[in-house]
Structures are given as C-alpha cells and as structure tokens.
Image (cartoon, rainbow, N blue to C red):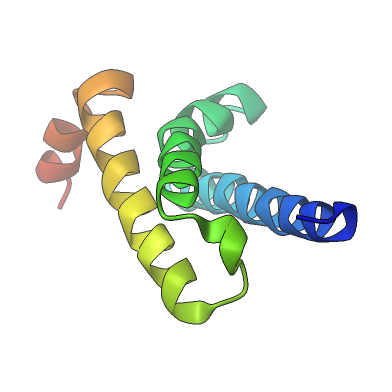
Length: 101
C-alpha cells in the first residue's frame, strides 16, 4: 500500500471515529445528559472498539469507500458495541433502557 493510500485510509478512519463520538454526544444531549467529554467518550468507547475490530477483521482498508463493505462494518461495529456496552462498560444499561417508557 502506498503512502498516499495509507494516508487516505487513515483519514477515512479518523472521520468514521469522529462521527461515532459525535453520535454519542448527540445521544447524550437528546437525553438531557450534559455530563461532558469524559462521559461522552465512555459511551462511545465500546462502539469505537467495535468499529476498529470490525474494520480490521473485515479488511475495510482494502475498499474504504465501498458502500456494501462499509455497511457490513457498521452493522458489525454496532453489534459489538452494544455487546461490549451491555457486558463490560455498562451492564445496567439494558435494564435502564427497558425501564424507560
């Protein structure tokens, strides 16, 4: 992989990771939870880990702009992120989500 291609793939990955953090921040804000950057990163962390694992396992670097591959990575990342959040990061999250009406 050439230097230019590596830089392009890295830039795309940084944008993806920033969007995950932004989504977590918007979610916290929509729930009137303004706890700051640390809390936002804590919420985003399992999804960031899920994205990195999915991107590496599914070789997103080979075709980072291919919609089909990106969609599969996104779906796997969300699944892994939810699993990590529910088991490692915040085991009570599911119970709290089920209580809300």
